[in-house]
Each structure stands twice: as structure tokens, then as C-alpha cells.
Length: 79
Image (cartoon, rainbow, N blue to C red; front, side, top):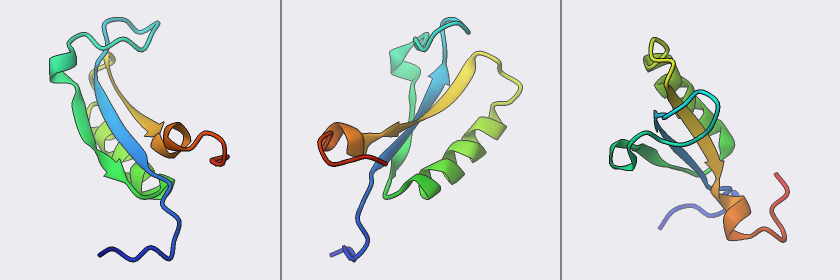
């Protein structure tokens, strides 16, 4: 079992090609890159930065960090 002394603030890193630069609509949902779920923002940010740098030449491709902890517990998650 994982060490649970540090509170998990789950974050999802996701990305792919957008249909337009003006919005956040993926061109093809079947090609969305679900990178993974991370226990804190710092871990998610490191992976997001790496993926974003790998796709820097593709203006239509974007990666995002989704704060899952805010969705799972909106009443108590403030960070």
C-alpha cells in the first residue's frame, strides 16, 4: 500500500491536437493523449512541461493539467 502521510491532490495531464487555437476542443477525441494521473501539482507540472516541449513545433497541439482533486472534493479542495 502507498504511503498516505502526504495528502494526495490528484492531477491529470492530458493533451492533443485542438480543432482551433481559439478554444479547447480536441480535433479527434480518439487521439487524445491521456498522459497520466499524478499525486501532486509539481509531479504533474514536470510531465506537462516535458510533453509541451516535445510538441512545441505543433501550434495546434496543447497539453493541460486538470485538477482532479477539485472535481472529486469541491467543498474542501482549495489548492
